[in-house]
Length: 425
Image (tube, rainbow, N blue to C red):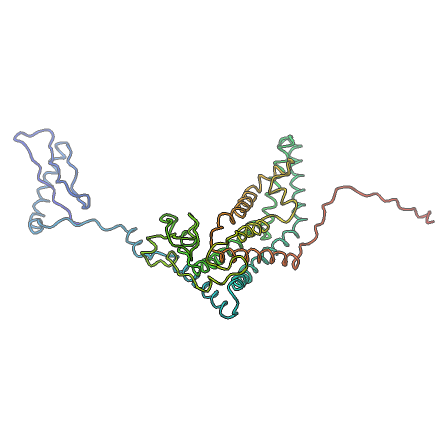
């Protein structure tokens, strides 16, 4: 950084009590100057500065003559910007493209190796993905349920202990005696004890949802590869990566099929940005000609929508069956049929879980009607995948049954009349 010379102060004929220094020249914001800001200073201090200025100006006079035409040195760049400029930007597009291409290769290889028509190859493809990706997660979730059921007596014991401690606090006057307040506090104490126990034994509730979320990308890659083979211009992955803006309805289509506006599937849903770039996840793909005649029954053409919409409504029915709880207590809790104070207090502890289940139930009901204009191949894959999930759950439930529940003790003693020693008859 180069320093600029200080200007020579200007004085009048008489010696004033204050001396005014001339203002420094105005510089650009991009350069740094060490000149002091002009201000009014007392005379002794100004005289000292004037004497120092004389030597300073004489010392730098020769140097300034050689550098009068040079501009001041700009400030160094920010370290933060320099450090960030050396980092590469990570893009998930190659990973998505590789996954979708792998699913397409697997689907075509399965079709060629087995020699089956497409209406059988697609269910086999869905079953293969279910066996490879979904079966291990289903077994893991079932084993978690078994461990949780085995811990039920311990959970009941902790609940009894929490209620006993609450009764002791009420007796000492440290807790309210109101019944509703007592029930709410008992439910909160029991929930805290249960969470601590589940954390200690590794059976937390979030582990039931994590496997399903891990399988979702695999399923999505499969349906995206099948969509490309049907000739769709953009699928769910392309819309999630590049956004929903720019998707417009136009002419053309997937082998004459109609489109779904706003979902990125169907006819003429073309993104000019995606077509102008090399991003393969959003560009147009030609339909496989063998899929046009690869259907059966009422849907002979797999590249167009089901003309009777049987597959979409069958999809919604199977998804609803998979989403609903399998126990009466779970159904009553899901629909809020239990209005007892204990159930109302327990709802506050599991309300996020119930809201998630209700949201999934609404999505399952709306999945068929919202996607009824998609190609029949996608619905066939989706129905096969949901049916595979339902069958796997039923088989694993029989193969790994839950342990029998031991009912809690009722707290009543049973009195037995035993004969005396003398009366043995």
